[in-house]
Amino acid sequence: MLKIEDLKVGYGSIEVIHGINLEVRTGECVALIGANGAGKSSTLKAICGLVPVKSGKVTFEGRDITNLSGHAVVQAGITMCPEGRQVFPQMSTIKNLRMGAYTRRDAEQEADLDRMMDMFPILRDRAHQAAGTLSGGEQEMLAIARALMARPKLCIFDEPSLGLAPKIVAEVAATIARIKDMGKTILLVEQNSLMALRLADRAYLFEAGEIVLSGTGEELQSHPEVVKAYLGH
Amino acid sequence: MIEILQQIVNGVAIGGVYVLIALGLTTVFGILGIAHFAHGSVSMFGGYLTFFMVTAWGFPLLLAILIALIVGFLLGMLIELLAYRPVRNANHINAFIVALGLTMMVEGLNLQFFGHEQVVIPTNLARVFDIGGVTIPELRLYVIIAAALLIIAMTLFVEKTKTGQAIRAVAENRDAAILMGVNVKTIPLVVFAISTALGVCAGVMVGSLFAIAPGIGEWLVVKGFAVLILGGLGSIPGAIVGGLVLGVTEALAAGFISSAYKDVIAFVVMIAVLLLRPQGLMGKA
Ligand SMILES: Nc1ncnc2c1ncn2[C@@H]1O[C@H](COP(=O)(O)OP(=O)(O)OP(=O)(O)O)[C@@H](O)[C@H]1O
Ligand SMILES: [Mg+2]
Image (cartoon, rainbow over all chains, first blue to last red; front, side, top):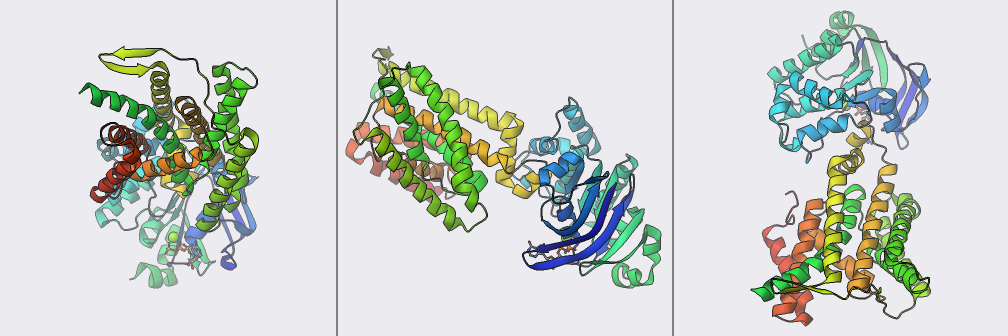
């Protein structure tokens, strides 16, 4: 579904991704793990058109989407739930959700809104509250629901568990598992490597802007280097 | 009591003009973070244009206003595209200088095209209504009604349409707006088009209620920014409340203290408000 070939990304003259190859197949959940600053977010931003691609190719459903504008990437069917949630702070929860459906013109948007609030009951309670006043966990649920409102074919999550209490992290993991069961294709970036590898069908390990290891979730969970450096036992 | 009501009505009329100017300034500031100083002069261009179409070409007033509105709409897009877009990613001082240069340019063009004489847009609205002792000239009533309708339309547009919500979204979090599928290249065009059209309406109101002359545009834009600071930068409800507060304060000051000091008094009130609420009346702390 998504294919990345020899991708290089940089900020100004500094290159931070040095030619990576990865693939996400339809219906899969693929995880990207790695240390801080390894270049996971930069890869996602390049896919979504937030930072320019230096060289290489991004293909989505057979179509070249390299360096497409951000809004066109969304129209193609890719939605990202960004690092740090990035809700619209002064808009109410419900307006944030409606923004998620910005590119849609169909008649089922209100029904989807209802579905999202069934899936995340806390959002119904907070429907008219400014999103900036929600707790971190609530904001994460909102960001996830907002991303789903676009009815994306590929859903990208950047560190959904960042800064959340263990109980909420488990809730986020359960939510992503549910989204996967809904048949969505998922690309997941996580610092919480164990959670990511348990959820993922396949995973890639990033180190300093390169992919150094890849395999199924189980394979990486038991790979000695991953265990030593990222799973800490 | 009647006298107070009378001054409030007068204040609401000019306050409505301030709101229309401030709505444009505040939405532009919200999405681009720039102080669009040329807004007053561009608005006056709309007023002059209307005057010219009515007096030189004999167009009916409403047709002239409609044409001026369309011109304002297109002119706004042109300003965004040619003046501000090139400095979009540059240091903020660049946009600041572009804004000042644009102001001088538009003032110069107004002077070239329309001369330095002050002009009044002829309306032939001479009736005066008397409502419970408060007298309202017909023209002033229409200005109030038109301003109210435009403000309501703008609010509905921002709150109820996808494009309006996208404008808010870009103002609140540009990258997140992109991830929602908002085209952040077209949104500033829309904002400048609408803002300038609202400014043209304000220009027509000033030109028919009072007069248009060189310098009026700058006077109006200073008032507009005063409203922005009073109401809260980037806030639409702030522009509405702030504009009305400023207009009414000025009218009361002029009516009961001294019309020579009305601007001074209005600024004193503004400073007092900011001492109590530094973020403005409707701004978020
Ligand atoms: N806007 C930017 N300008 C310059 N350099 C940047 C920018 N954003 C990221 N970088 C650099 O790019 C490199 C990769 O950062 P990136 O955010 O992609 O890492 P990451 O793997 O997502 O890390 P984390 O797990 O901490 O989120 C880092 O060295 C970072 O300093
Ligand atoms: Mg990151």
